[in-house]
Amino acid sequence: MRLCLWLLFLVVVTARPLRAQGDRCADCHIANPQADPVPEHTYDWETSAHGRNVVGCEKCHDGDATTFESFLAHRGILTSRNPASPTHRTNLPQTCGKCHIGPFVEFQKSRHYQLLRESRGEGPTCSTCHGAVAARLLSPRSLEKRCDTCHGPDGVHPNSDFAPDGRILLQEVNAVRELLATAPRLIGRVKDPVRKKALEDAYEQAQVPLREAVHSAHAFVFDQMRERLKAAKERSEALLTELANP
Image (cartoon, rainbow, N blue to C red; front, side, top):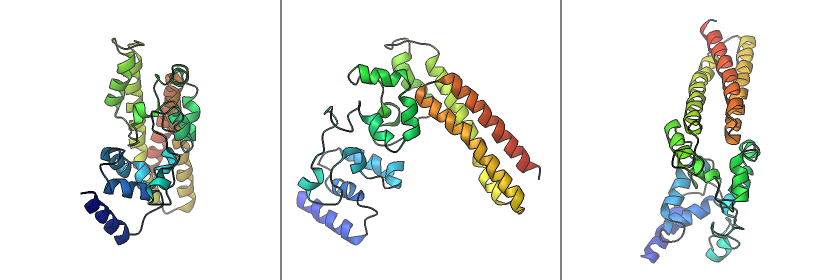
């Protein structure tokens, strides 16, 4: 069976060019589903934003993505259970923060981050909300359920407001994103270059408080998040009104 899988692997990698060196890890592990990690981990990566943007496995796990030689490829990799591993839950914020700088800066301001550092990994970390590798964005209802695991009536830090507040605010984030989603197409139809530039600037100005609101969410500062969302909604509605009345 292993020989068949290896031959299949050789056929796949020689039949098409590799998208990037980081793909070599996934190619090899997909061809060897019995090897660690479990196949679902690799498939989650492949369908995630990380996989679509060819952010290779070595970016989080270390190792050498330039070789198919197993020993060399895995040299230096530590299991996620090892406290020194970049994928250990206490180190995930720093690992993710190498690319996601804004969310990492804000997360460090939160009580969640303090708990993670003080309690030897018992606090929430990036994968708590975004998954181990799928880089998912939770739905408002899923976020509420996730918050309830700690802040619900049976949680370690009960608070009846946290989970529903988080759900409502994420719903508002999604609503503003939907408002803005129609704007680029409408702006693209504008013929007057001066007006088009003004609309593009207004679109970017509406995006600014929305990004700030999302960053505030990583610090779990809900009052600041509400204020930024209010500004984003007002700017988005003003932009769409302008687009509807040329």
